[in-house]
Length: 350
Ligand code: NCD
Ligand code: ZN
Image 1 (cartoon, helix red, strand yellow):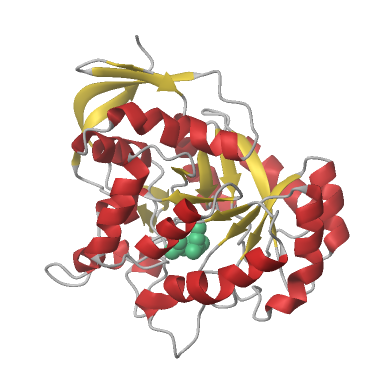
Image 2 (cartoon, rainbow, N blue to C red):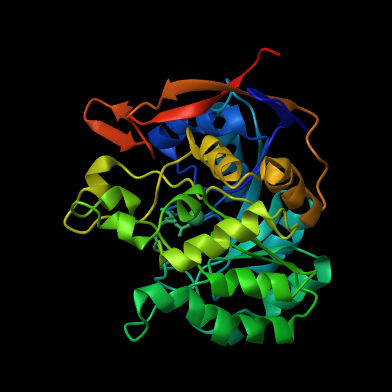
């Protein structure tokens, strides 16, 4: 990595957690991800969840066709349910169609209705994953009417994760989009089989920002932004360069009509701005020297993937973020930090 006053050159980053959706939305957004990222783990929570080889191959093809301008490597994930077909995952993994499997707890987030409610029902699949070294990606929140929304992740870390780890100590686990100090500490205290991704929005904002000058539905995501002390702890940990933390933007587009709604959907579309936001955070903390590890090295090392050969160049230059992306005549997706001025820009020129 080379850091100059107004220029940074480093290995092109990877995004280890992205929602690309399907249909028109996929076609309109995929190139944004390819502009900034090379290896990309694609979330399987479509309306028809990705849980067979056939579905994964079809979806992957659509992704590749939608990102011809800015190519990237889509890594497909298997959606775990209580009656998963283990053979599909096993064969899919051995044939390199599935890279990992994703665990959602029932009703914990968008399209998690096929997720699990009883851990013992997935013992067999976790056993197989541990044996074959298939990474398990977890949305670590337990949904129940009796658990406060700001404590769902903490409940998972305290009461559920230790059980999974006790039964499957060699299973490779990534806690996705962590939002609390509790998750970060758990990862720090339990090497080497557990890591975490952190989003730009959980680093940039805390729960007060959702409610500043009114309610901002575009800052609603899951896990919900938490208290400022959690945000501060995440910033400190991520910028420290610790190798168990890496980039996963959780870019999750929803139409504006679904966000600004009597019952708005969780998810923030940040693909056009995520990388620059991370950069801004490392710069502010005076930790630019650790930026490349977080974006381009730690994740690949944890997943045993080769580092990217491509480089990326940032130049200090102001630019104004587009406000939204048009899907068709009256459907739009709002961009995270739309209309704001960012001070670094990706360029192709040296
Ligand atoms: C994601 C989505 O919209 O699919 N939403 C979100 O708030 N992060 C699902 C998820 O990753 O939880
Ligand atoms: Zn997600």
